Image (cartoon, rainbow, N blue to C red; front, side, top):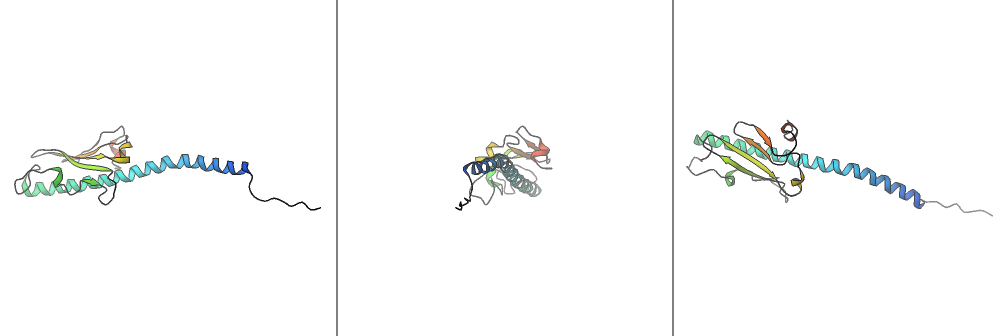
Length: 146
């Protein structure tokens, strides 16, 4: 009498594969989230630099940071970029003119939505001297990627 041979996976084999996949996912997902935060941060840095260029062009025209050529005050609404990313449905950073005088200014990018979990860098800033800053627990060189 011939015995038929069963093929396929046993429940134990399937559970081992599921456990291996779960372990790999638990390692990969945090790294993926970290890379997303870094990419969003890089986009906010680019937006801050674009706003900084606008402030410098305005200074060249009007001779001061706090007023436009028509004499009206410069506000956050005048900045060319007020959110990051510019083309996304979810705002990850809100950009603003934190402080401005005739000879100084400070621009900030405050994290929003999922990016608010970025406690290493938190709020990014740059001033008229090009000095970059953060409010998080990380370092400026790490957060600004330079």
